[in-house]
Image 1: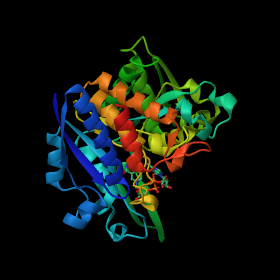
Image 2 (image 1 turned 90 degrees about the horizontal axis):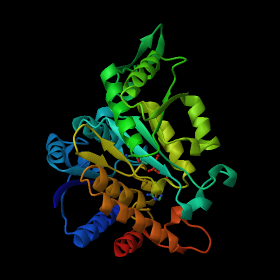
Image 3 (image 1 turned 180 degrees about the vertical axis):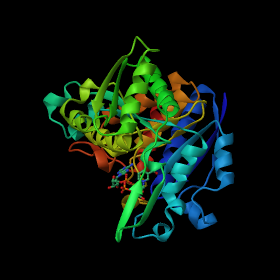
Image 4 (image 1 turned 60 degrees about the vertical axis):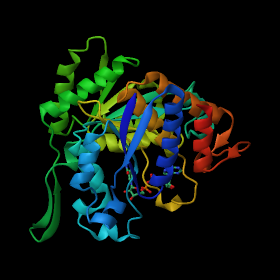
Amino acid sequence: MDFNIAVIPGDGIGPEIIREARKVLDAVGAKYGHSFSYTEVLMGGVSIDATGVPLTDEALQTAKNSDSVLLGAVGGDVGKTSWYDLAPNLRPEAGLLAIRKGLNLFANIRPAILFNELKSACPLREDIIGDGFDFVVMRELTGGLYFGDRCTREVDGLRTATDTLVYNENEIARIARKAFEIARKRRKKVCSVDKANVLDSSRLWRQVTKEVAEEYPDVELTDMLVDNCAMQIVKDPRQFDVILTENMFGDILSDEASMVTGSIGMLASASLGESKLGLYEPSHGSAPDIAGQNKANPIATILSAAMMLRYSFELDKEADIVEAAVKEVLKKGYRTIDIMSPDKSLVGCDRMGDLIADEI
Ligand code: NAD
């Protein structure tokens, strides 16, 4: 089959990790007779430098016309680049918000899997880890605090800032359905996370999620307050299957989930909407501190490409092969610096990509 992928290398380590993910996709294509063609799209700081804005309408249109989008990362060192002297809607990260909104991607899925081979990198105690954990954080992406009206003005002589957190019932119901559908393919448990003891938006979230749950009687729904969830992820991560939550809570909890798996360089993510087109990207940022040094771990991006094979192209077998290749390379003892431990072989970004592609 033929697939047209819009690739957005972005800034910092973005181009390095995207190069390795393409290598792996090409190995999959060669083995299974698929053809992946790539159209490069500018976004983030590189787009600001070239066009003055973080995402042009043409770039967004190219992404919309593709079968799926693979993104590296955008952004630079705040304080060190002039990108952050610009208005917030013209900064690199505004490109991210614009593409998610433009593609109508409302559900972000971040798997938090503790790979057996990387147990020693997990900061949690062995009795907490047990035989490992595997859960996903599903975060609402296009509503909530990051998209509500905001302003800073003077009130009674004091500089006063206001952000608004808005959700309507349709926005909650559509992501709840995605969570229940994903849970059906897993261990059939959804934990909906909110702050219903304080926020009206959370009370509506809880109510609508319960209504949607009636359509999925085979899936168990529980509710948890976000502060408790932050504790439970480090106290007993094995209890979770699918964590469903709104935009800002999900932003924070998914980063916490990243860290309990050991390394941010291992964590993939998918952003989905109603159609098959998705945006696949590592959970980490552009890591300007190691950019251009061949030190980046490309595995999160490679596993994101595997999610693209599974969710957008319905190539489950090919996705399984990529995930197995990653595990095999780790089992053989190869590590990038972020996951390095004694007695293992240190490799750079490009060699890690080669090893995984060779394994396929
Ligand atoms: P970061 O994730 O880029 O880096 C945090 C730390 O993790 C750094 O020490 C970095 O070297 C390390 N790291 C990250 N990815 C790695 C990898 N693949 N291999 C090895 N080490 C890795 O977060 P940050 O430093 O807070 O942000 C840097 C820039 O990235 C900022 O401009 C930020 O706005 C942007 N950002 C972009 C995205 C995105 O594009 N989706 C997400 C988060 C942050």
